[in-house]
Length: 166
Ligand code: RP5
Image (cartoon, rainbow, N blue to C red; front, side):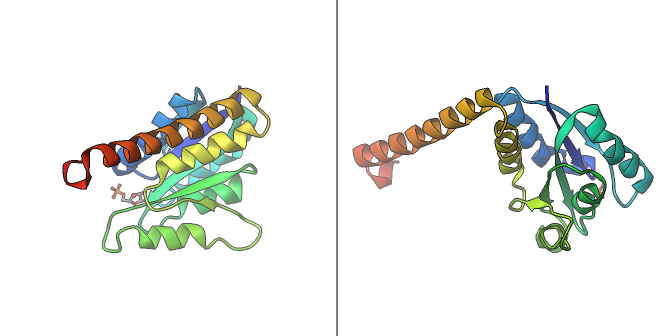
């Protein structure tokens, strides 16, 4: 079974990156989760990324804050898709991480989601795996239908109780 790797630079990233894990669990996607710092233990990151594909990891979800080097370094070392999650925190509130992660040089792509967008990162990983997995594709269709029903229900409630009592 294909597996997703969730990597984050610090345990201070765990609260947000946990949403990626929750989302993968909801879709029944196998994953592993690690704290590996690109700046503080570059050698560990290199070893992890160089072996990940051979161990069955098909997509890496990578979250980091501040001068976020982790997603870009993963994309340099891991040959399959890397999704970057810029994390809020520090004086620039995640904009530093966003710019760092999204502005990759040509040839080394990172699919960057929004600041703290761990849930979307996981959904994107599920979509990538669903390219060759019909069961996951059906789950994604069901997820989209469920989201639609939730909005319809909210609209019906608004019509029923009015905005003051919503
Ligand atoms: C980044 O620095 C991490 O991804 C984290 O978002 C940020 C702060 O790390 P800690 O000082 O909390 O370990 O590398």
